Structures are given as structure tokens and as C-alpha cells.
Image (cartoon, rainbow, N blue to C red; front, top):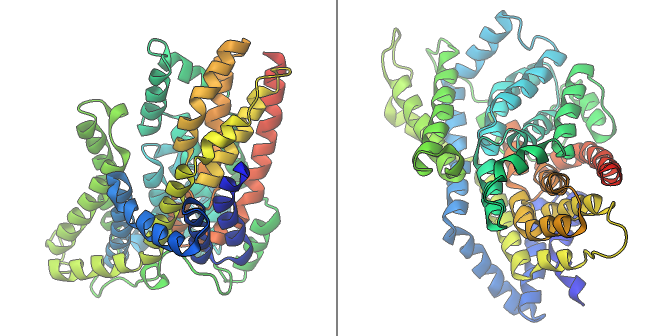
Length: 472
């Protein structure tokens, strides 16, 4: 009956995708897991569920992400009410940017490639910059969420000058790879097939405008003016997304660009400070919280000062907007808390070690990179965390490579690819949740529309790992 530890995340994901009731599905998944932990007693499982939910806030990193999610709503409300979003759209289109559907999609991809500092910030900036263009050109919110997601974890892992790179290097050091760890990581990036293909596939979609499956149907729906599926529940309240500028606003692009520039700059400052001078060792969750908080503060002062115009709004009015915007993020916060709680329960059930124990070292070795990739995909998808998959599988993948004479960069690349898949595709991933939030999309619709794309890329990646295992 060891397989029963797999049920909580699988049940939650299947129910969410089939019923579109993501909150209830996560609750049932957590309850199932806590009931197993309580020896099969559902009443004790409920008590354990409450304890696990409260325990989410005992982790400072979790709490920082939750606060970040709330404050993002406040920042969105501020820049929307200032007229900065409309001003930026007019300014950009006056320069020939994003005047066509193809241009808007390419812009979203380019912004995602440029902002590789932290996956959550990537999603936020891609959504903030591109959503007005997508809405005006009648592109579905699901497609914007896809670009937010496809250029977050894959890009952050392929350009690891951030917390992702520092984390992987730390795991390598824990495996005794002290000298040469940077070289091993650099070599593994060439075999990070999923991340490479995910980025390339998103660019191909942007350039060609082609699509298939649920995403194509969403595009056909949006062409009629329905940016969201009838009955959809966007991850941020529509009254925040569609908020009109305050009276007297000149709709200037600077009212959007200055807060965003401050936020990006503060990410670097946060990583430098928390890493004690080393960006690679900085705390991503701390940096994004500092960044969005500082951006809100700068925006409030910017709008209150008479900088060549009458003040847009008082500090009191700005604070009211921050509170109003944050209240529109309650759904996001609840989803993040449930996702974290389910991850805790899955770890308490030792799901990861059970899956790893299924990997054997017998038989031919050429298929092991493909197997490591698939196991990494499953672990990261069901737990909603690439970093957890990295931590669980690193002590298995590297010794397997060394003991069987396989390429270590290839095995590490397979592990990184599997982890990135889960971060990109899983409905439990905080990156995917924030992508839905940044695009103001229904979260389940985002997952459903991008899943055929992510599975296609994963399938091609698996074939490449098999071929590489044979050739190398």
C-alpha cells in the first residue's frame, strides 16, 4: 500500500482539471493526505489539515510569497488608477510596438526573456506590460498567462544568474561537487532540453500565430470579444484590471514605467543585500517582497507630488487603492496557501523518496537520462515545485551517472528539465499561479490551455534524452 502516498496530489490535480473547482479540489487533496497521516481517521485528518494550513505561515519564505501576492494587487491598482497603463499603451503603439497580434505576442516573449532575475517577477512584469495590448487586440488571457509561464522558470533556469543558479550550485556542493560545480551546471544547460524547447516553442507560437487544442479555441472565443471563458474566475478581480484612471490623469507612461523600474532595480538590491554581496546567494522571496513594497511606496509618492502637473492623488487615496487592490488578491492567496499545504503533506508522506525508490539501476543505462527526466516531471508536477524535485533527485541522479559511466552534465540536464516542467505545467506551482494572476486569467483555464503545449515539449524532450543516452 506504499503507493497510497501518491494519491493526495494526484487527486487534487485531476479534480481541479476536471471540475475547474481548484480551491475545493486542493482542499480535498490536502484532507486526503492528512487523513492518511492520521491513520485513516477523517476527523483527525481535518484537525491535521488545520495544523498543516497554519504551519504554512511558520516558513518565512512562504509568508513572504503570500505577502508579495497581496501587495501585487495593490501595485496593480495604483498604476491602473494613475493612467500609467493606458499611457504606456499609447506611447508604445506610437512607436510601432505591439500594434498587431503578432507584435503583442512577441513583445510578451521578449520581456520574459529580458527579466530573468526571479520567476515571480518575470510573470508579473510580462503580465503588467502585455495585458493591455492583449486585451485591446482581443487575445485571450489564457495565452498571456502561457507566455508569462513559459518565460519564467525555463528562462530563469537557462540564465541562472539568480537564485535558481545559486540553489542548484548549493545542491551540487552538498553532493561533494565543490570545484567544477559551475562548469558542471554550465554543461548541463546544453542538455536542459525542456527549458530550451519551451522557450523556442513559445517564440514559434508568437511568430506564426498558430495554435491547437484548447488554446486555439480560446483564441477563437477571444476574437469575438470574450477575453475570458463564460463563467471563468480570473485570479485577480476584474474591477482592478479594468479600473479607470482617476480624474485629471494625463495618462503618462512614466506612471507605470517608474514603479516597474524601481521594482526591477530593487530585486538586484535585495539579492545583493541578502546574499551579503553575492547575487547568486540572495533570497528570492525576500527580494521580491522588498521590490514590490518599494515600488508601491515610490508610486504613492510619485502620484502625490506636483511633478509638472497637479498631484494625481493624495497618500491617503493611494493607500486606499493599495488596500482595495490587495483585497482583490484573496483568491490568489488562498490558492497559494493550499498549494503550500499540499506540498507539506506530500513531503510528510515521503512521496518523493517513494518515487525515487522505484528507480532501479539494473538493465541498460542509456534510458536512465530519460527516466530521470520523467521522474523529475512527475515529482515536480505533483508537488508543484521544481526545487523540491531537484533536492530529492540530485542525490540519485549524480551517483547513478558516476557509477554507470554516464555523462554527468546529461543527467543533471535531465533533472533540471524535469523540474522545470513541473514548475511550468503544474496547477500547484506558485509560478503558474502567479502567471494566472499576472494575466488576470482563470487558473484552471490557464493550465488546461497550456497543458497540450507543455506535454508536447516534454514528449520531444524525452525522445532527445533517450537519443542522448544512446549517443553519449
